[in-house]
Image (cartoon, rainbow, N blue to C red):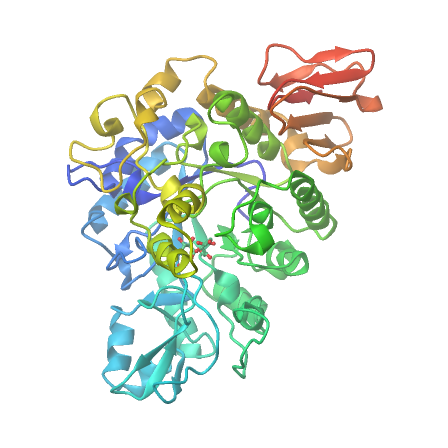
Length: 545
Ligand code: TEU
């Protein structure tokens, strides 16, 4: 079994990491060019977002051929070279498998459209009239989750974009096809897999309207999901690989099952509940300040719950679908580096495998776009239109996008203060924020106290102290609203982690057992401990040992 508990994964959004051929788009040789940087950071795996053949309506999450490389990103030889070069640096590649749906450009779907009944059963088609979709389910990108095909007299299901048709996992031929995809990449030397929205693959036997919601309660963590994941992993022979499932709107009980080693499903899971504490009434596109007590409670529930069930969390703040964490949960204006470091310590010392999203190790910020023309993301463009239809003004809709758009984390990696942030010799497909002149890799490597150096230390600590990767966790001070406090412990070691999410000083009683312990790592000079109390400065993190 590949060990992953003391490992750290770095996520690369391939389209925005490094452009090697001057077309303004990130590519595979660009990643190979930057491997020494990732080696210096100290990461063990690189998760690359999809670069397979795709029309790129959803930037590669609309796959038209799972075992072919889209020319925009490079060639199969480039992929083989990357795998070799990464391996020489002790870094494993984790590829992103989008198995809930394919692009409607996929040959399977094209055959289905041409009337081939065998391939129609690869997808979820339902006979119907053009004015009545089979259910009232909604796409996660807005609008109906069904699209009518007049010449077939049928609807097909798409939980995401209309160009992303959901696969029929109840069809054993589909499952066999996808096992072959895993075997193909396994034989190429890939050492890990991320499974995109894998908890949506099992649809209910009967499709019915959802009078109270968008239909997700019918297909999320569906009836055969555990059986199908177990079958996929064991038949493809990847039970010993590092695997992570993206679990949309899931439950703790299911995530224990998905990641408990006895189930032989996945190594670990992403859940997103902690990234919805600033969704007003659960609506991503309705703004409200982050509910910090709710955040603390979610951390405690999931960390202690997964521990109790012997499950395993992927711990993260950001990815290619989320706004930048320092802009969302920190204070990028007044305490950017302090809050970036605090956010890092908060999750890197928890029980789980940490994921660093490209640029997070620099404290990169949201895009700060001011016009709709700057946005590219299909979900954001759909919701801009929907927000206007709901009566929001253009200014209100742009304010919401500036806080919630997935483009916030998809701006080019900021390598230097050179033109285009050193990402490309051409105009990048998405504009970097102006702050790339100050926030970039070259500056970070030259600064011994940079956010980058802080991440390096956290990664080193994970390798040095078994209590971090293998110790137990207990959350403390549940009623302290703005400071996350937890204890990590095993038979021989004990850490206390205190992370303030407040923009001003906060003082609290030091945990009794922490008395006499010394500062292991922090983002201010020294911890202000006096008379059994600790005063935390704005966004201060203190780790005592
Ligand atoms: O994301 C699943 C998903 O629901 C995301 O779209 C995200 O949670 C949502 O945008 C938040 O509002 C996966 C991929 O990570 C995402 O990039 C893809 O667009 C999506 O699946 C479809 O493949």
